[in-house]
Length: 274
Image (tube, rainbow, N blue to C red; front, top):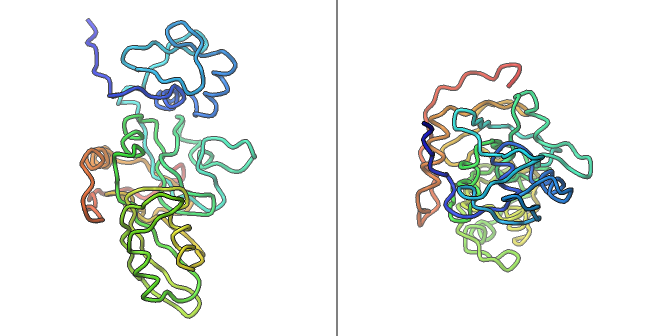
């Protein structure tokens, strides 16, 4: 007799997101299929933005029910994102997508969070719906560390303003930890630790204090460090790394911005395929 498994969902979710959690379609592709009438919820045609309870509702696509992948089929990879790629599964403007860099995985994975087209560094892609939800939900604030090169010198006043409470686009930002890494006559490199990911937050913060961002590179996410992973390459996360991400994401955010202890895991050198 099959034992009913407890759902990983504690609240209703949008049906487009459910498709990505099940590793079937990207959100954008799911929207197209919903508009085409190919998706039903409990026998009724679905609508864009409709919320469902995965533990109670039956979602069918092309007449077949879809369900989240079992844990054994979950795949999560760390990608060293190069500049020039958009952080999405597909792009209606024909720009290169980060999913193209992991196309040889053999399974469909989706980006977790975003790095803008011109930013580089650590990016996670997964088909684990629980992990994606934990890392992107507003309640969870996993520290993200960036190395940011800006033009010219950074004055003590500018450094203090970046570290102080700021308001961007009418939103009061959570505190950001800023350290001066090194400086040259023509540019300065900063390390900035964020616990939220507002749209183009670092670029807008720097613009507000009169600094021009030359490059933006994410070097760490929670306990994960990009390390020496070559640009454009990826590696699968070890089970202990995924577990650490989930455990840290479930904890309430700390009052101060602190970098959590790194997970000490021996990672093999990237092979030709990853």
